[in-house]
Length: 182
Image (tube, rainbow, N blue to C red; front, side, top):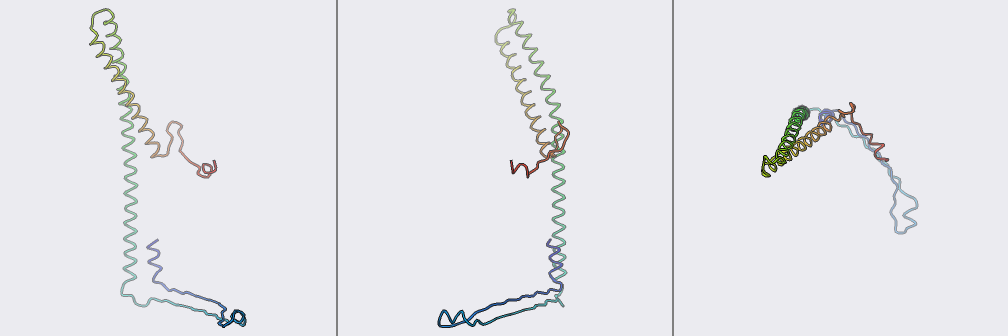
């Protein structure tokens, strides 16, 4: 827009102004609005740049450079956005592996607790070992739940960035006209 304005600013310029008015001056109200004076004016203005000592070229060059800077900034923002999506997808894929590992750890801790509990009931282990086994199982389960939370959080972050619903295999769209009227 600035480039377009800089190019157009130093071209031939024509402006036309017209006005029409009625007025009067008198000592009484009746005389002031009777026999009004008619005033009309038309003005035409031409502007033609003849010599500007390179000012026009400088403005155009500056506007082009500003446009180039904006284009580069937009490209950098787009690249950064794409990088963020890529990193979120990588994190999401890694989180899936962490969820699987945390689930296996939780299942192993549960089985270990069941074995420890049976041995405790038979009198082969003391209460401290049973409690320790129970805490290990509980900790593994909490880590599994935390990894699931991170998994779904990353899933919805990727979905928000891409505006794509991967579960239903469709793009996410919002009809703002219908949501405003609802």
